[in-house]
Length: 513
Image 1 (spheres, rainbow, N blue to C red):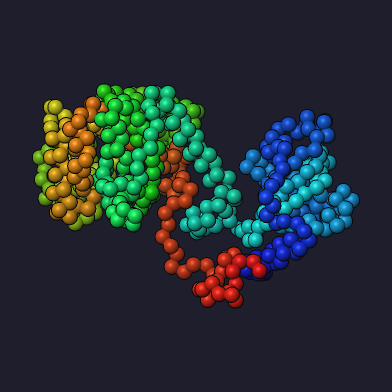
Image 2 (image 1 turned 45 degrees about the vertical axis):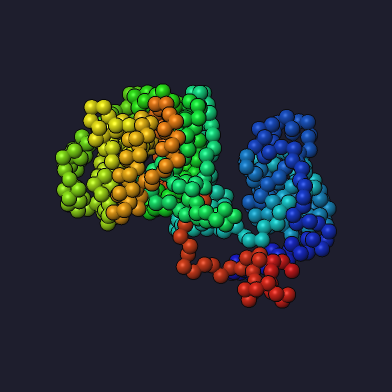
């Protein structure tokens, strides 16, 4: 059996021969009268009118039968069978196809529709041309591929061979459109805030750092857009939202990727009580338009999004599942309990971080039905307003379903003095070794001092939401190009730009000669 490199060399020779014959293997133009799906939909009318269609697509199968050849081509809308015959194309035209065209090539064909004796809708080809020559044969055993990481590394092949995977990204697009339409209809204005920030903020996370040479300054990839969106509230916009990509230099698992997508929105003169109802409306609208019903199955459990969703206090859940009381137990007690519960805690983490880790590992998996977890410790969420009846806790919720965090929301802190004090407490935690503690943002404090209206804000993790609604096992399945660790030993297959000795000399093999 020929190796991949040998098959590639054969295809390169076909390409050279095709171009020597005066045909471009990568022409600048193409003609298409119909998508394949449209031609199939209007098949009877086109057949009756003897309309000559021009179709384009990738060759997926070739079957020769003496003086005739059947070819399946596929575009983004569907697949159709082509019928090429020697007495229709002429001996030279027919042989040209057999000599130069392979599975994987993109082709344009012109012809008339007909139905075979077996009833298959087909095109009798009267003319054809190459649109893009494929230099590598498509893999034959992709469906049985056991190396899941290889699927993610070569997502283009995964999409080509796995329609189920492709449909997940169709659903993802529909989810984003539905959310955007809902936000627009609710009076929110879409905005864009900086990805490169002089100081990261808006979440507790370790950032990615870079340097801008022209200004000679360090910059950070944003971990959240929150502090910039709040500046817009100060500036007079009352309802704003953003679809944003965030970057966090943290661990990776089935629910976390260092680069992830979020919908974040803020509404002036609203609070958490309003936002819980708004969140219920978001999910009701989303499930109706994307799923078609308000119930889905997740890991064998039916989950029903029926208003009103359940409410539970953070501390009550901590007591129930971890036998801990945030108000009365100190750091040492939390640390000891973490050890008993086999919850790993990084060195230097203070009580809020320990409590958060215990909640994530012990409590969160129990929150299967849609649940708002309310009244979080102020130390965990330093950007939310304190509860009037208990200033050690804040007016905030995190929304869970299927044991996954879907949404985080606050009654936004707009007291500049309290915000400054909480930033200082975060800096103290940072000084003790907590690398994820938030930073003192003096410019944001100045913005608050000009006055920010009371507001409610939320952030929905879109990757996790798509994973949930498509019943996927990991975020990597619903992120087109997830972050991957480089392989220790890359493939020895040559690429089109192979350089033999590592330098671009006259005798080097670069591309196709």
